[in-house]
Image (cartoon, helix red, strand yellow):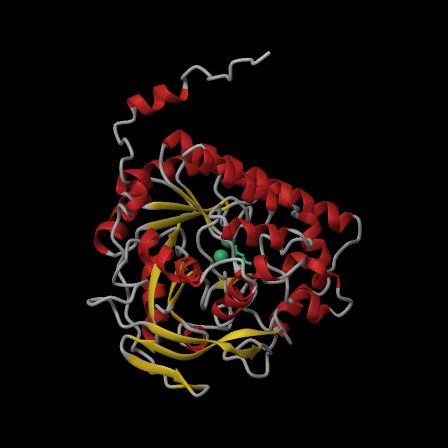
Amino acid sequence: MPGGIDPHTHLAVEALNTESVDDFFSGQAAALAGGTTMHIDFVIPVNGSLIAGLKAYEKKAKKSCMDYGFHMVITKFDDIVSRDMEIMVKEKGINSFKFFLAYKGVLMVNDELLLEGLKRCKSLGALAMVHAENGDAVFEGQKRMIQLGITGPEGHALSRPPLLEGEATARAIRLAGFVNTPLYVVHVMSIDAMEEIAKARKSGQRVVGEPVVSGLALDDSGLWDSDFTTASKYVMSPPIRASGHGKALQDALSNGVLQLVGTDHCVFNSTQKASGIDDFRKIPNGVNGIEERMHLVWDLMVESGQISVTDYVRVTSTECARIFNIYPRKGAIIAGSDADIIILNPNSTFEINARSHHSRTDTNVYEGRRGKGKVEVTIAGGRVVWENNELKVVPGSGKYIEMAPFSYLFSGIDRADASYLSSLNAPVKRFKSTT
Ligand code: DUC
Ligand code: ZN
Ligand code: ZN
C-alpha cells in the first residue's frame, strides 16, 4: 500500500525553554520504521516573523531522511504577516496556516485575529487549521487546580476538560462558516469536539476533523499514575480523555465524520518532563506516535473489523495527500507517483516499547502494547529503507514537498460572497406540523 503520511508532527520544536528530542532525522527514521514515508510539520514564526521561522525550519530539516512538508503557525496579524502569508503560498509551497485558540500569552490568537486569518487563508486558497481549546478558560482552570493544591499531571487533564475543546471547536467552525472558508480541526480528542464537526459536516460545511493516535488508542488513566515519570509522559494538549471518548472517535473515523489520522508526535524525555514535577503547567506537552501510528490504526481499526483495508489507506495516507493537494504524487501507487510503498503483514505481530523504538525519547505512551499487523518493508522514493527490522536511512535524502493552494476543499466556494452572506440570513425552514 502507499506509505503513510502523518499530517501532524512537531520535530525539534522549542517549548518551555527546551526542545523536543526527536529532530528531522531521528523522528523521520522512527517514522520510516513504522511505515510512514512523509510528514507535515508546523513551522513556528520567530518573533512573529514567518520568513525567519521558515528559515529556521529549513535549517532543521537539512538532515531529513524522509520527505516532508510544512504548515505555518500564525500568532499575530498585520500587513507584514499578511504579505508573508502570500509569499508562503505563492513561493514557498505552504498551503495551510494553523491558529492556536489555546496557549494564552504564547501562541493564542483572539477571535479578531482568527477572523483576519480566515479571510486571508480564503483569499490565498490556503487551508486554515485550528488547535481548538478555549485558552482563556484553560488558564482559569489551571489557576483553580493550583489553588486546590492539585499540582500533578492529573491537574493537566482536570484544568482543560472536553467542554473547553467543544466550545473552541464550535466557535472556530462558526467563524469559518461566517467567512465561508474550509476549516481543518487538528487533534480532535473528545466527543464534544467531534459532535460539533459532525453537525457542521451534516449541514454541508467543509470541515475536516483529524483524530490523533493517542486520542484513538489511550484513555486518561495513566495521568493518575502515582509515578510522576509514568503520569507525565501522557501530558499533551488537548488532554487524552476519559475512557469512552477514544471509542467514539474510532466510530467517527469509521463512519466518515473524521477523515484522517495524525499523531501530534512531539516528544520530551523524562528529565525534560520532570521540570513540571511540582507544577503540571511546566510539563512540556507532547506524546510519541510517528512510529506507532500505522501499526496502531491497523490493529485498532482494521484487525478489529471497524474499517476496510481501503479505508485504512485513505485515513493514513490518501486523504492527507488530497487535502494538502499533493495527490497523486503522494498517497497512491500509480505510474508517475513517488515510489513510497510499504508492505504490511497482517499476520505478523508488533510489540511497542521504549527499549526497541527508534525515537530518541526514553519513554513510550504505548509501552508494552502488542497487536497484529506489522510493517515489514518501507520503500521511500524507490529506496528500500526498512527491511528485516533494519533501517537504512541517509541524512539529507529527504525532499521538501511543495504544496499548492486551492485543494479540492475550495472547489465551488463562492469567493464573491454576496449571495453567501445573504444565505446566512435566510428564513429558518421549519418542518410542517403533522398534527
Ligand atoms: N500539543 C501538544 O501536546 N504538543 C505540541 C503542541 C500541541 O498543541
Ligand atoms: Zn495543537
Ligand atoms: Zn500539534
